[in-house]
Length: 202
Image: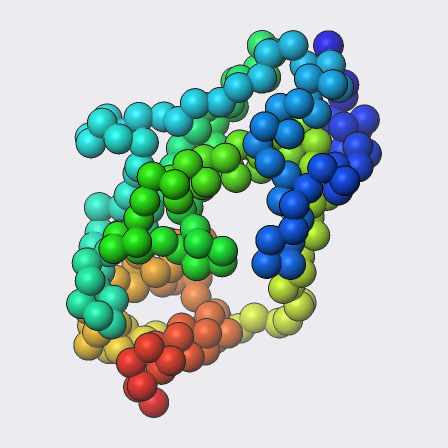
């Protein structure tokens, strides 16, 4: 029988991890091995099939163009995780480090990497194993600040720039867990900086 969440969250997985870009990563196979060593009898995961395409890649219906006029969407993978008699689902973006993968650089290897990372995260959330790794990663860039709601003028500026460069503002917000209505002044500042870096707009 798998140990409890309180027990598994105390397991030190650091010795089994690899370091990439300053973060510790737990390999999916090692994750399964550790679960079995801590009482699990059955552990595996499978990629869910996109009913529209028949592939294991999911993407938003909205399309947008980058600075090189490449057509893009927000890409994600969805997996089904089995741990003994429990079943969990997890959906995660396809990433290259901290950057989302675009259509022109999408590969099966990146889809698989997204699914594997999603599995390890799903295990951490639902069983506690490796949870502290994610706690450190998610909080490393966090600095508490007071966020004021974006002003009408700020929203109008970002909308105009997005229209100018054929950027889907709604998709951009969705990929960052936001909506246009919930954007803060700080969010607008980050977006304006990103547009300036790509297109040279002031």
